[in-house]
Length: 349
Image (cartoon, rainbow, N blue to C red; front, top):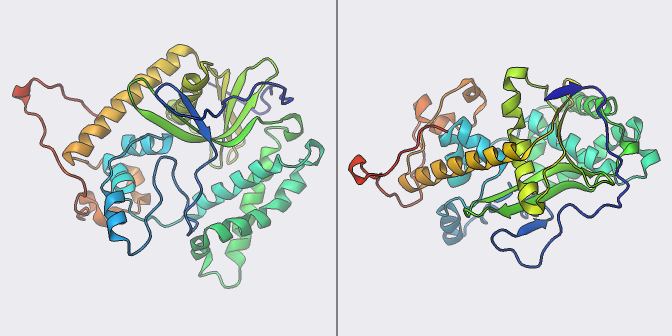
């Protein structure tokens, strides 16, 4: 991995073949690429691979939705399980509500601005233009998700909202010191991708940006509104990018030339050039992870893994580590195989 302030950028003139065509029928080993799933009527964001919440009062639909085991894996949900299996259960199985945060919402806002900026001609992609888009994109976000207005409900004078919008503008402006959008013509923005491995595991997610050089080389780019991690934590930061690289490799049989993380909070650009062996290791890791998720789903054994991140968790009230009681498990439970059965066991992922 390397860190740079002005990475080399492949020319993207739009002449290359689209990175992922959309087939009419999806089957094992075939690719599926489509727009990100539409938000439900209430504007709530939908995690790829997760069904929208059922309408209030539809108890049969709600029970069916809550009783369905997970069928796919995204980078965020994989990270949840590695961080804390019980957190994964609360989000995927129980689908407990979570309050929006200023930091996460600011990230959504900045992503929207950087995505929409490429709708303009190259010469008009300037920092002042991008900063001017922030209020309008915030209005669009509020229209789609009115519950986000609760973030500033106790800010009658608007001072905190004004400061928050100013922070978003600073992040957008910093991006122009790291990349030059007048030299970029992304092939895809906010691209939803999905593929099924030979094992049957379905992987899916949304890639912030895909650049393709005239030579066909693929670069996957992800924006982060926080600060770059210390070098000893760089492997964890790359997990999401290698996940996406694996999906692209399985879809198109092309190993992306570069994975690029753009940290707007600290002004760093972290890059990694993967090789086939990296993606093979990632696939093995995800298969082991999915097996652990499958076992937990069947047994109902979702153990908490306390860390310093617990302080930011919305579910402490129902977490045993904090004296809480989880909701009744909504899926049927199978007993664990005994040691005499000769079945293997899996340790922590």
